[in-house]
Length: 337
Ligand code: FAD
Ligand code: EPU
Image 1 (cartoon, rainbow, N blue to C red):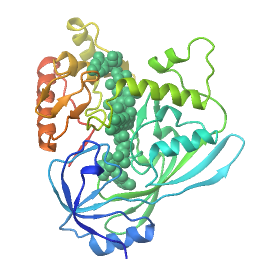
Image 2: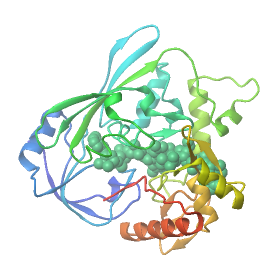
Image 3: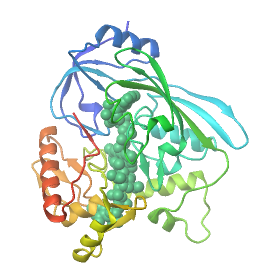
Image 4: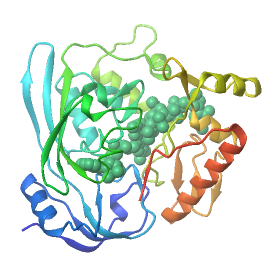
């Protein structure tokens, strides 16, 4: 019988390093164990939190309910042709270990997403992305279980309704569907995506492009940009880059000609939230142990003993200040619990 822990510390289960606990905690390693937990311990009147590696959540208080950490492992090749391979991966696998597995086997498509923290099970939730790639481009299907009916469902890529840092799992199915495995369709031909500004710089001239050098370049860029996880708690970008219409951008440009913006679709552009926050004067600011990273203002930091509430309050002050200066509403990327 799977062990359900009581008053379990979540300190080591969230990358913000917030010191809170869960009333109940279980980490099922098989579908059978997951069903057992849902049948015996998930009650309609009790709160439920599905937890991966806690790298995109902010816990603001002790969780007075059940935390389920699906720890179902395994990597299995379902099909292989000369052009592509279908790989089924358990939700509990670490995302970057999976990237390394793909690189070692010559499977192309996830190398730009190297060094993103978290689990495979969470990667479809916010459609993880970096350096010109999004995981939706390599997802074939997502399988999981409904927390109430225990029905097992597979969603194909279209049904996941992937968007920028968003999917059906972060909206309609939030907290109602536990992802147990993901099937990836990866390419077997060496076609690389080096279009993203900083990545392009790494491969100018005759520098060899292969899976290993792509991963190496991405990791170097990330090391220079992101805070050292051993020193500071964070959850990566705290806010999404806002999408505004072109007319709004034109107006903003008359006051701020250097505002960084990239096409989102025909009518809209994506603006760099880090730039907006920096220009609103927040880079490097700190109140107690809650602060804004000086090298990348989109990242909020826990310097040691900040509470989730203090980080949340800092985020709220940033939202108000950016709105006042630019008339833009920042949306949080991190899941606030
Ligand atoms: P958690 O934080 O545990 O959970 C995130 C959400 O997914 C929660 O709502 C949770 O309920 C839900 N969830 C988790 N597992 C499941 C499951 N099996 N079934 C259903 N729902 C589930 N993200 C990017 O996109 N690009 C980046 O470049 C990037 N860089 C980062 C850098 C740093 C330093 C950090 C700390 C984070 C970064 N992130 C980035 C955010 C984070 O890595 C991703 O969002 C990651 O996918 C979260 O995985 P997790 O397992 O930690 O999820
Ligand atoms: N910028 C500033 N000041 C800052 C931060 C950024 O001026 O403090 C400017 C940069 O100079 C650059 C632009 O903003 O011109 C974009 O910056 P960067 O390349 O660092 O990317 P980002 O838009 O800030 C996004 C993702 C990251 C992802 C990187 C690389 C979001 C919310 N964030 O950041 O994802 O790793 O691009 O692709 O889309 C995450 O989601 O947690 C995350 C880290």
